Image 1: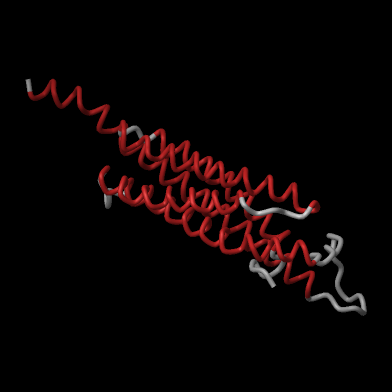
Image 2 (image 1 turned 180 degrees about the vertical axis):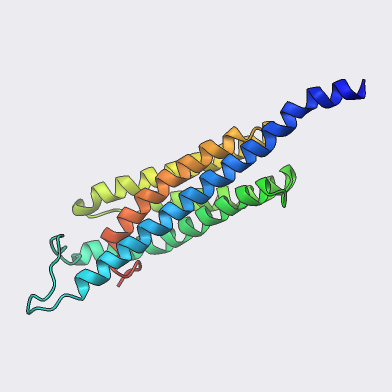
Length: 198
C-alpha cells in the first residue's frame, strides 16, 4: 500500500518543482529584461548627451524639446506617485519570489500583499486627481493603464492565497511586466535623462 501511495504522489511531487522553476525563471527573465532595457536606455541617453556641437557624434534620435512649464508641473506632481508605484511593484515581485522560495507561507504572502494593494489603491486615487496638460493626455492615459495592470496583478496574486494555485503568480507577473514596460517608456518622456523631475 505504501508503494502505491508513493507512485501516485510522485507525479504531483515532480510537477510542483517544475512549476516553481518555471515561475522563478519567468520572474528572473522579466527582471533581467527590465534591467537590460534600462541599461540600454541610459547608454543611449549618455551617448546622445556626450555629443559635441562640433558634430563629433551623431544621434539617430531627434532631440526631444524640453518640457513646457505645464508639463514640468505635471511631471513634478506625478513624481511622488510614481516613486510609490515603483516601490510597490518591486515589493510585489519580491513577495511572490519569497513565497515561491518557501520563505513565506500563504498567511505571510497575504500579510505582505495587503499593504502593497493599499499602496497601489492610494497611488491610483491620487493619480486620478491629477489634471494633465493637453500635450500629456496620452502619457496620462498610458500611466493609468500601467496602474490598472499593477492593481490587476496584485489582485491575481491574492487569488493564490484563496486557492493555492501558482498559475495566478505567472499571470500576475505577466501583467506586472507589461506595466513596467509602460512606465519605463513614460519615465523617459517625463523625466528625460534623470528619471526624476527637474
